[in-house]
Length: 155
Image (cartoon, rainbow, N blue to C red; front, side, top):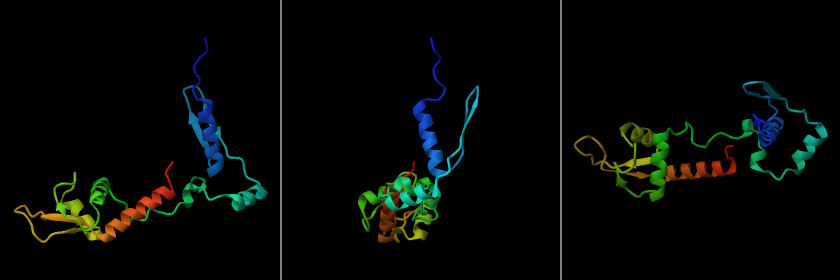
């Protein structure tokens, strides 16, 4: 009986392709050995040929050349969840402040300072606004972020 391979051939090919594409050294450690993959340097002729004939596949863009996310600073998980929930309703459609999950005063304040949500002037006895809504700027920012994700997918 033969022992099961510690690293499958498909995984080795995938790692080699990543090392070559990004020009990085990859090291894999197992119980018995270390495996290092070094990228082979490209010749100048093949590099210029790839640059001129590449159809512009977003997966071929090196990670360090991908532009930053359009929303800076990035959303934390509560802001992201609230904005995605508000996007289901659309811009300028008021909802009760307590309907989004994990949406407290701190998250509300951060999104309101960015100009992505609006809050009503009416407050309850605990100081919470009566209603909240997504602004046009918030809707545009979320659409820009979706377009950025579709153009530059994360591996």
